[in-house]
Length: 268
Image (cartoon, rainbow, N blue to C red; front, side):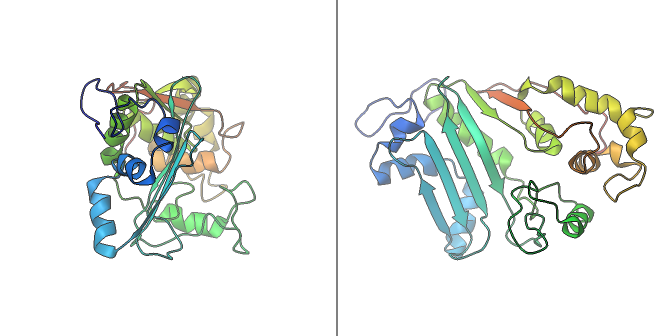
């Protein structure tokens, strides 16, 4: 495997250039797992080694797909790291999911309905008591546990792999408002949705329509929530917009920070 700075292509042990996840997935299991293992931050690897954790690579031959699942201990209910990538027909890398959760942090069952069934990111109903507890603890919508603040360590590793495949762009779909703001901080720009993000910022400004809707009618619409990413994200999750949060698409050019900031006056 060769992944180096600059424009050097990723090659297999035989020296053949690799251009896609599909190319990597054709390799023998030890070789492709060495390549994909380079996506794991050193801090995460150390944690898994100390705990004798479980690491699983799902990279089927014939598919442009990679999924990495890591548990701190075999049999744990929750993953400490979950990554899903696929490459597109346009030569871009799709970052479908990346979750890095602190296994030692308290769990909030926002992903379950009151009967304990998966609510599929609240599409099958919300667990309001757990959501309120999670919000009070400083978690964002859909977070079951506090994160490990490791995305900044992971992203350069992903850029290195993507650049080594000869690709220029990473694309993603932020599932919540706070995800979009967080991606901005790491240098992403918008394919679709920048106007919406700017309209949201204007709407939460004093006198704006969203500002007026923070009327205390629910725990997620309290006055003052407009000042933080946390508050805005929960209010949007609670349906304060005129339409559901959907359709925002972002991209990162390899090695480039876009410098976008659609919430410049946020407190945190």
